Length: 530
Image 1: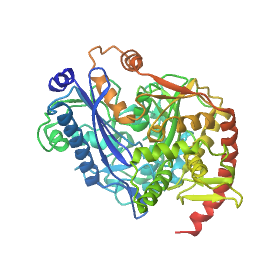
Image 2 (image 1 turned 30 degrees about the horizontal axis):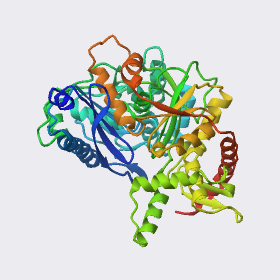
Image 3 (image 1 turned 180 degrees about the vertical axis):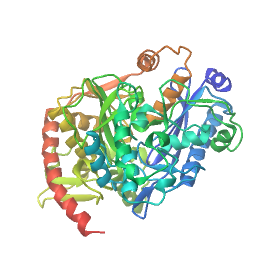
């Protein structure tokens, strides 16, 4: 009855996150625990060499995820959602959505997954003295400039996926600082776009005669905890075509999945970090000091509060692993055996624990798409084994799970080894860690850092953006985000910590060397097989 009263009185908050394969909506109560959720499955598509989703994909996915949340609330509590304290929108970071003065989309949405901006990324990195990865929004914009794309002169606004959805709901062209830091570098002192680098970009395009400046077309940054607009009448109808949801609800600043992952794991203070693992995998480490030099493998982004964070982002994680699990499910069905998805994952993951620590001559390359960390613009998932290699389900599964983390380890070895960044522990969340123990144990051993998984690990970024929404609606406006998370949210959640295992660490190191050697075969496959 208490939850019913919270819903009816509008004291709950909602977070909606657009992941690569799933859109998830989560409602949280006054104690910040999830009380209902809804999802929508979707997939990006490769069209004319571009990984994209259509505007229709985005709208229908948003509506379906929300409808499923609303249906869940009706089923569980017997009431409708009419008002909430606040709503938050989050999505996969980076990418490119460009619009003209009338709000018309000028080019197909280019997601973070695209590795087609190498020329621009290199030129901007050199000009700024700051690493600009290929997936960053500014790299996509400058690549369009260099390519002479006809739509560029007409741009009047460009943004991320979260920024776009927020704009449709509120009419506000804004971003949270964490998501903005994946569009363009942020000044750590002002927590706004770096003015010196804005000036350098203007110099790079000065001869083009554009009617816009970069500062004009970037979203305005809204600090965490401040209102980023309200749900308009049109926005309410867009989100909930049934008409039950009322307009006027406060929205927090839209954030990227990196920022919501930090919030969902309470990893926003120095010496803390988190790993998010799903379609992609990335590690975030909140820095105590600047890195000694620019590394192409490491991004510098920010927390939702604007503090600098080192990020190792890998485009590929569980896609190939999921494909193998589906293959096992298909094989079982040919014998009339239908195993529930969650049970199949749990048992296959558990089988990996009995395999040799180094996978004994078996190596998987999970590159479903390009991978910036190791210099690939395309991918060809591969399984390689020596003739004498042990080849059974347990060894295969261990190799597949290792491959999800191998490229991340390559980048993290630079951060933890060469740069001597120290972390007390990493908080892990996302699909790779839903099955008990296995992903957590392997990650701790791969990186040599204790890894914690919280009770809330499965909720991920949708819960994180719901927390940011609740933080915006808090009564004590003087309270910092760090204090809000420490005192009001995470004081009630348990976590399990796993230390690195010496044998696993040694085995993973050997596997990583084979993985790196096997990249020559991956490169040959990309060149030869189309």
